Image (cartoon, rainbow, N blue to C red; front, side, top):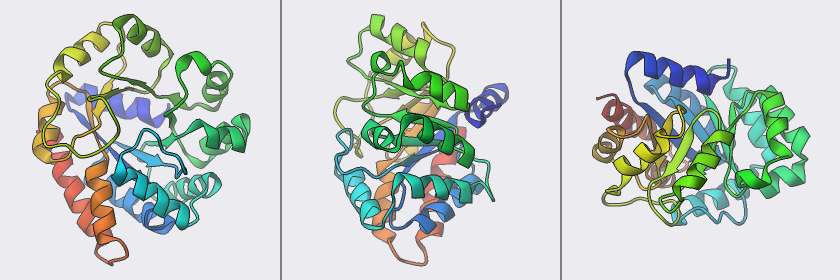
Length: 265
């Protein structure tokens, strides 16, 4: 069974909420990415999203843009990110989603990318700029490789379109809790409960809520309405702060542990 599907089934059976963590692959270098992934698994992270560095990350705010730039400068290519996933798999079975822009997959080759990602141990892809209507050739390759297709639903998505999107998704649905790009926020959106209820009316897939969740208090608040909480920029910001320090992994993993505890509560 796909690791993402298995993890959410386990969480549901235990009556628990999940934590999805996003980091930029290759920030500050790919060995750090490997070590962070293993540390996150040990503190209880349920799904790891690895952002594949891209020169034009249009869905991302400044924190994640800078992480993508650092990843590119460190030489993190799609092929090397896939190799890093294979290295993670020697020590960890944490579910892994690649957060990626379609141009990278197109340049790599659709079938080749899906096959190599799956062989390395990737469990799903979240392709930021590939709407379901344009994924007709790609989805069968994903399914054949055993990968989940994670799609986004936005606050502005009409309900009729929500119904269309969730039928095409697998693994989980990612609800973007606010308009705009990724980034830390002082408070969470006040429409999360209503929007997640609308999504649930059309699917049994778990709903992960992200964009702007920055603190354990916010994570606990969002978990009340979601099946999982996604935290990215607040973690990426700490990676930027600790950078090459030998304390990078324990410091960042320590913060992530507070988020795990918050959503479990």
